[in-house]
Image (cartoon, rainbow, N blue to C red; front, side, top):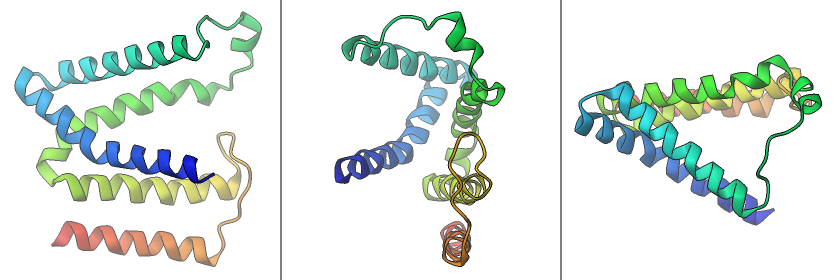
Amino acid sequence: MIFLYGVALLAGLASAVEPGQNAGLAKSLGRPLLAGVVSLLVSIATIAMVMLVVGQGGIPGLDRLEQVPWWAWLGGLMSAGLTAAQLYLSKAIGAATFLGLIVTAGVITSILLDHFGLVGFKVHPAGLWRILGGALMIGGVGLVARF
């Protein structure tokens, strides 16, 4: 379990660095949306290589594709939206504020997703301490943005 937490922490580090990288690419290319396409193509190529290395290549059968819930297809749309936000907002509001807002919004949304068991998550009630934790995050990101 500790290994998984370590990987999650590395993902958090990457999420702090990535907006600056994407914004830098956008500035260099002079075309933010093209930078987004390049970034997502690099992501696709990377995931495709990992799939080959771990032996998960190939396309699933039609029976598997028919079982996918409608909302599960929207993950790519969410990724594109996040990339666009990085390209247009991160440099303007700063890395700490940008990531603070994203993480805080993600935690608040996750508390609601867990509470209601939405998009495939098991129900995990939003008790007092989880709600208080979310409220503290809102206060924390407010301080980061203000100062």
